[in-house]
Length: 448
Picture 1 (cartoon, rainbow, N blue to C red):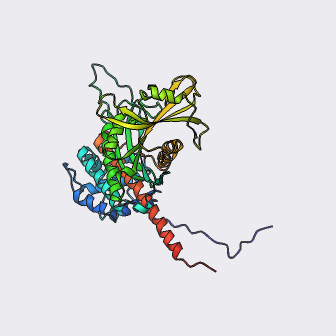
Picture 2: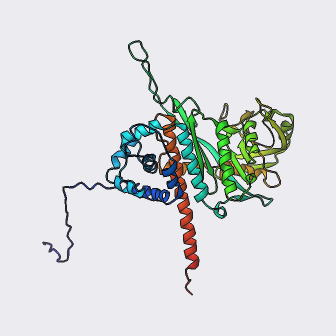
Picture 3: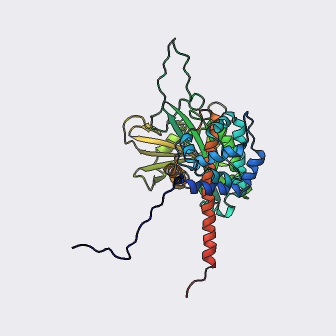
């Protein structure tokens, strides 16, 4: 039986045109939102007035144009600059218009700009980002924090490093060839690879975050394992300035640090700035002290189990323990030491801690008092609530930050700070949207 076509059957019309109409990349909307958020703040005016990079062949472009491209690259999912510039043609004019610019610089012009960047330019740019965060960041009443058992409010700041390894090819070295040079010789060096072991050289990117609001206060990078002793001074200055700008005392700030910083020298530097500290101790001379051995010979003072781990730790504490740096006796503090013990699951030397028999001991130090912070509180803040490993994991799922735009250290650093800027913008807009929604809901009449 032959089918009869219905008279109301819909038809599809296909129209073609000889002009190209490429589809914008999927990250185009995100880039517009972040660029617009920067444009309406004082940060944009500061970049226009104060950001200067001396270079030759400048042409019609200023530093603002190149920062626009770097911020777009930080928001995008492009693996490298070549891929980014391949996606830019259909949206270049729209991106430039957001910052009142006519055109975007070419890839060659961007390369010359990155080559001309110097460390003092990077420091000036980082200072502008911190100024913007302090002036236009999340207000005090929404800054979060925690109240200890004595009723004192504390804001936790996490300073932690991530490691980006690089593989290197074998170089031919003979008399018939010119001397070999590594492109990454200034950017990377031998160091810790974050446990993966799949890298010949590495670069450390240290980030400072307010743990409650996920605001990024700073970012520092260096070859190899970085420069933790020099970087901690900049981190302390940023935290103190953040607290004072919000009407809080420096003593209400707590720096949470991993074992890279676990020495008396770091604790003394933090104390001089009036801040508190909570960190994993890497100085196992404390473990062999008589008073510590006498304490761990007794029954545990507490037991701690992380919510997402089956490992249970027995814990002891030693109050008012003098701690002196090995190299400089002037770096000394009186600290609170917490010792944990867990079963040794794998044979051999553990990655973290000190093995004694069938157990692994770990040390943690803090200046927080025992009346306000119990042993379980200290361990909970260190292992879970105070750290921002979850934030870094979320960041990695969203986009790859560890992308290389230049083999010059001063040229690579602006991209890392740009990602901090875009992440802070996204968090600030989320908080603002939640506040607006709360106001709308409170003013909406309810049905009766």
